[in-house]
Image 1 (tube, rainbow, N blue to C red):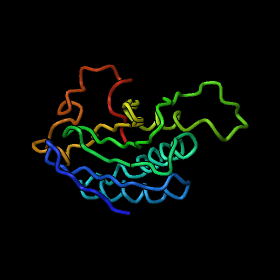
Image 2 (cartoon, one colour):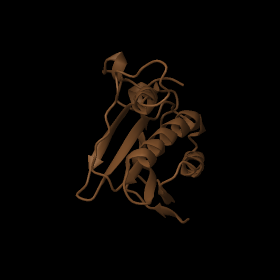
Image 3 (cartoon, helix red, strand yellow):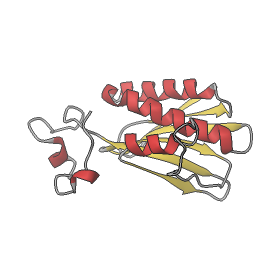
Length: 168
């Protein structure tokens, strides 16, 4: 499999890889996420990001069409990291709220919702991308951030607590 690295307007490369639509691809997706986050010096996000990408890959494996999926890790802005899985199905996932406590399936998007600052689906004519975004939570990866509160730097200090970055 080939990993693609592209330049982005933020100055951070985006990472992507096409994988077979099979459960074993989750391990490769986790490695891609670890590589991208390490390159960006965002190791504190790795554990949650691995869980998020595992759940997104699992959903695509279960519900997508065709034999491949594409895993994407980008920095759409200096303040955000986005983890996404692209597939050829136009069916939009939804978060289950009626999951039976004994059922181990159907909770993936609940985890994605809990571990990201926001998540969603971008629909395309030929398929979709399901993604989760994490806002940066520390000042050490924000240029000029020394001595300032990360929420002040990110412009989040005026947001309600429920919409602010979750501390790690």
